[in-house]
Length: 114
Image (cartoon, rainbow, N blue to C red; front, side, top):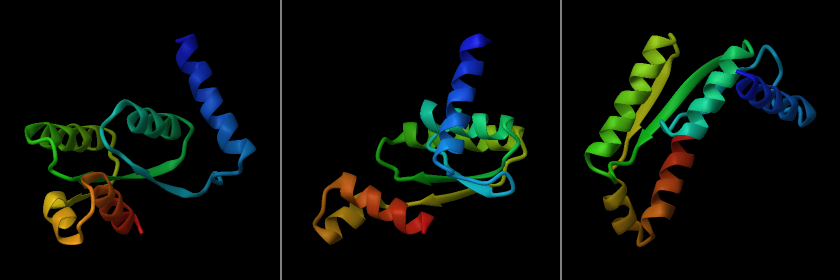
């Protein structure tokens, strides 16, 4: 438990030092379902912040993409976190724009979050 507490304290110290959010702010966490975004969400919740989550399904990894979305949905449901989701046809967007898959996913994600 000591490692977890040190990690949480480190995240909160960084937030305070850089004045990233105020205690009454609502925070939208980009929640991929990976360890980093899940850890951030849990630390913020434990610190008492009001969080909502946003998840993008780019459909690039077949059933794995859908499993990530299910994990995110289940996590948010179990913690009563409002979840915003968006599905993208990333391959088609990349083809139409003549850009890489990575660039397409970035543009779609940033556009959605905006």
